[in-house]
Structure formats: C-alpha cells, structure tokens
Image (cartoon, rainbow, N blue to C red):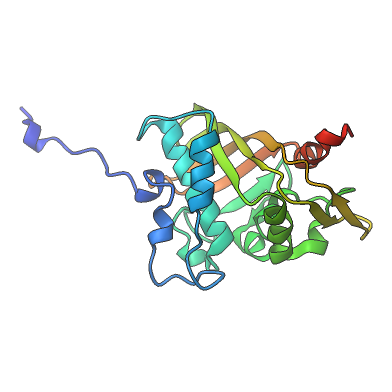
Length: 230
C-alpha cells in the first residue's frame, strides 16, 4: 500500500505562469534597451480597469501570466535563446488569422505590433514603421496597453482562449499608410479596446510551441476613429 509520503508530488509550475512579471527578474539578459523594462504603469492600469479577477493558479490565471511574460520577452529580449516562455527557437511559430506561420526571428526583426498587424492598410503600414517605429507610434497614442484573458475554452496541450487588449487614446495617432502617406488622428481621450481568440500549443513545461491569433486587424483603427463617427 502506498503511503502519503510515497506518493509523487504534483509537478511544480514554472514561475512564468504564476507571476506576470517573472521574466523581468531574469539576470544576465541582453535587453533591447539595456535594462529590463518597467511595466508598473501598465500593471496598475490593468488592476484598475480589468474585467476579471482570476483565482491564483486557475487555468485562466496561468494562461494570462504565460502570455504576459511571452510579450515581455518578444518585445524586450534580443536573443531567442533567452526566451523562457517558448519551447525552442527552432520550433516556435506565430501566425495571424490563418496566415503563414512566422518564426521568432521574424518577430524580433519586425516587432510585436507588426507581427500582429502584418498587412498594410489606409492607416498603417508595417513595412514603413519597423520595430522601433511601430512601438513609438502606438505607445505615444496609448502610454499603457493592458491585456487580459476573458475565457479559456480548453487546457493544455492546445489552449484556446478569448482575450481583451485595451488602453486610453491620450496622444494623437501619427503613422504612415499603405501608400506612404502620413496619417494623423486626433486623440479622443477615450478607450481603445479590441478582443480576439488565440490558440496556443504548449509542451509539458507550459512553454509555447506555436500560437495563432484571430482578431480584426482593423479593430484598433476603428476604435481610434469612433469618437469622430467614422
């Protein structure tokens, strides 16, 4: 008969699914701008305006923390070998709305905004902006852009979940469109909010092997213009 002492303990969960800022504590990292970024304002805005409070260690909480740490690494860690939230640089892929899967190296080159808004339109052209340019455009418009999990429909190894991304349009939007023309939209001071669904394949360590995002890529621009009735 197996005694309680002989029973196997459940596997310990990795820190990047328990703490949304786990990877910010990593040492000896080649950070994009020299140091670990400061997410304190975004986390404060998140706590003030989120829709849901997921119980600690619940599946929605684990997924939310994983994605937040993945975003930090994708935006700020220059070496894929230092991303702890992905299974391996060779295996990891990212794609949008059924498009061609892209590698981590592609995301490092173009940036997270351009990896997600990958098709030029009448308000924005990812080719014209680049990594630094895209972050400057959207961060100038929205100093904080919070993210949360709304619902999780299935657990590992294929995690399907609905998400929300939101901020406040405090600054003017200034970008370049598909024709190379400058586009400016006056700040309306109201909320900008988009939602979507994602499907993430994860391994036994809850590291991402591949993720696909489904959402309306024009959603953020529609939100920019809503106060003008356009």
